[in-house]
Amino acid sequence: MVLILGRKALDFIRSDLGMRFLAEAAARCTGFVVTPLISWVLGAAVFGSYTQILSLSFAFVPIVSAGLGYTVIRQVASRVDSHGDPGVLVFSIGLISVLCSALALAMFVFADFIAGFVSLGFPVSPLSLALAVSVLAWMTSVEALIQEYFRALKLVKQSLQVQLVSIFLHLALLLAFTFAGHLSIWSAIGVLIFAKMLVNGFVLARTILYGRKERKDQLKMPGLRVLVSGVPFMLSGLAEWAGNLGDRLVVGKYLGAETVAHYTAAMMLLSVIAALGAPLWWLLFPEIVRERARGNSEGCARIVQSRTMVFVWLAFPALTLICVIANPAISLLVNAHSLDMVLVVLVLGMAMIINQLATGWEYYVVSATSGKQLMVATMACALIGFGGAVLFAPLYGILGVALGLLCGKMLFALVCAGLARRYGFPGTVVNGPKTALLAIASVLVYFLVSTILGYFGSLGDIAQVVSASCLVAMIFAAGYLACYRKKLADQFGK
Image (cartoon, rainbow, N blue to C red; front, side, top):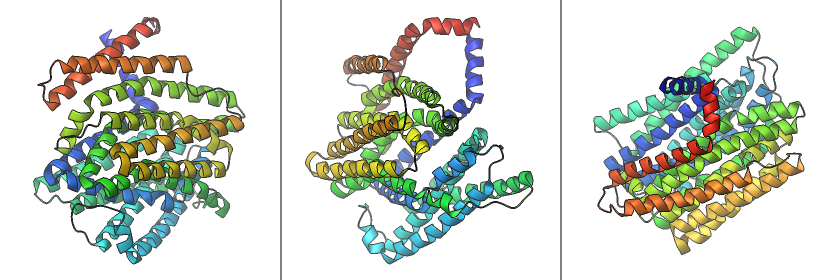
């Protein structure tokens, strides 16, 4: 039986989906290394400042990307041959570079005004902040576009290799600066930029040379109409930033840099949920585009519900565990006594799960329309969520920010569902009864594990995290084995 399990696990890891899970695991592990490293060496307030600078730079990524990610994936995924069109990628990156130059110029002119958006725990030159934000936005945009190109061609192995090299290079340089005693907030940001720049340059050069060799002709550039079609997605991406990362700036403005560190640590724990969904969604959009091209809406619905239910089975146990270990885990990550974060983590986790559940509807709408309606919906819902966070933060503190985020995500999911049904999406994205039963079971497991840990109140933070993880994993594993024992027996019988 052990050999069978090992063989099936190895087959899964070699599959496209397994490779995407490896990529997401590596990306999340980076966060769990960088967070305690900066927090323990430089302090929680400095880590909160570091997070705000990254959040501000990511705000400009949708602007300078100009929605080109969806443009690339639509044009390349619809090709008959498997070699793609590097011309689309080259031209898009060139356009991004021009937009980033304009962004840098604007940021230098309005540096003092932009510096007022962040609450840093140390004095900083507005010009230094503008330079760091604009260059990081440029490198992140190029990296995202290259990944979208690989995604359109379903080059999962190449995408994983690029992502792993970038991650390990970043961590190696960061650790080198730490052991040399030169770690600072600026060296941490500089290392991140350098790692992205080096990997992006190598991958882009190799992609261009390979593309010209395979096609044996000049690189074909996309038309203006194709590029303009990405503008609605640019605005949607900006609104999505307001709903996903803008909350860090709200927390910093009203509650200070150290509270941002606690909030970011909570979001980092919850990013495990997003990591469970990302591999499932990574290949979903190209598949929906292909099914739509065949006029097969039923096929789209089957693919979406299958992927979404897998996410549900993974996400609910993860949220249960994160709620149990929230306080000790956050204390360990930021090297400071955690606030009472359980309710905040629960609300943020619900917002994240709802947002992930809407992905299938969102992709279907993107594949069926020009994106204008989705742009309006995304902007409206994100502004409502962002406005709610600004409104509730002075009243309820960090919980108010979480409530504002939840309102925006719930509204966006409802709008996506309505638009998808309008354009012919049949059925729902989840199995309602199974999802409800799993939600009830998750609540019961939370109270059971919390009660068990309550009898051992003297446990340290690490012991609480390890004990809770083992208990939750064993309970859910036993439950899933009981539910699917017949299917597993059939699989092992083969």
